[in-house]
Image: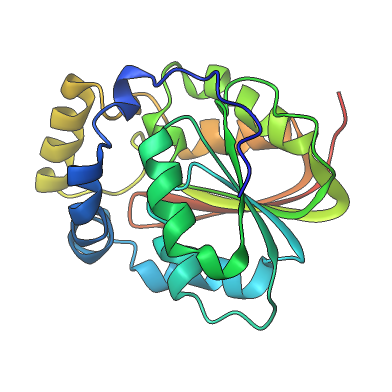
Length: 223
C-alpha cells in the first residue's frame, strides 16, 4: 500500500467513524439499516460491483469495504481506496489486502489526485454524509468524472428524502442523524440527485430502492 496524500482533515460528519465503531459498521449499516430502515437490501448494492467493476477501480468513501469484499467478482481488479478518514482507510486496506490496494487520503469534495483514468468508480452511502445541498455536493461527481475513463462506469447509492418513500421510523432516524451531523440529506431528493449527476455525465440511470437512490452513470462530461 502507498499513502499518496496525507493532508486531508476529517470532517465532523466523518469523525464518528473511529476504529471501535467500525467494528459494528457492517452490522448497523448493512444488516439492519439498509434492508429494514432504508428498504434497500445489500445485494442490490453488491450487484453493482458484480455488473460494473472494471480492471482499474476507485472506491470513494470506503466504509469498511464490505460491498466489494462480499461481491462475487469475476476479475481481480487493481483497487484504489480514497477516503478522508484514515481509520476507514486502514480497516478497509486490511480487509481488501488480497487486492494490494493503493491508499489515498483525500476529500471527495476536492479535485481528486492526478491518477490514471479508472474503468469503474464507486461511491456508496457517501453523498448523504457530505455537507451542503445536493447541488453543492454534486461537485464530487465532477471530480469523479475527471478521473473516469471515457468508457468507464460510475455507480453508487445515497439515502434520499423528498419524494423517496420512507417509513415514519426511517424518517425519525434520518432526522436524528441529521441533528447529529452524521447525515446532511434533509433536502436531498431523487430529482436533485439525477440533476447533479446529469451535469457531469451524458448517460445517467437512477433507481429508487426504498429511500435509496441507486445510480449508474456513463459518458463523463469533461469540464
